Image 1: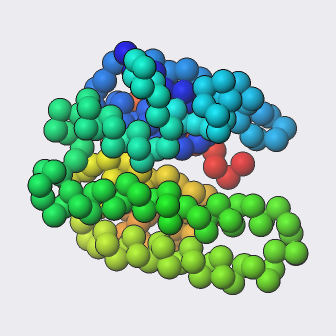
Image 2: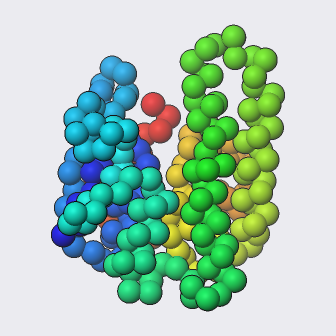
Image 3: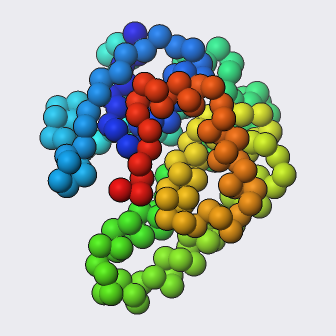
Length: 207
């Protein structure tokens, strides 16, 4: 049975969502953030040297990193679901989105999170950070256009990019992109997403 190490209010929520979309039999190993520091608990270091979540276990196989997890689970357990035809051009785009979400789009959002704690000292950095956030949200908005999902049909790419949307909304950056607001609402409406929240707990990224 697949085992998901799930940290509340984190990227690992989308891995629970992945499991629910595929209807897989899986076990959740819950981990709670420290109430004072909001950091992951030290117990996660026993799961993976980085002490981060998500991490999945599939027998002897242990995988960290959301994109790698989605790619592995879809390939190994998806039965052809949640990805375009591997020989299609859409599959090339699908792979790019899996890497892009964390490799590029999340960077300015995470920098924004950290520098917010500096107060006025962060002021010189903010124009560049704001510009980069707008650059990435504009790119995703343009790529999505009027389509429902990034590669046409709902796929693991949408699961991966969803967390970018969640964090951007928490920072008040999403409202300028009506199609992304509608996109996130469309993702939230999926029954599997709702089931994942019931099992893993709702996001509270504003905290």
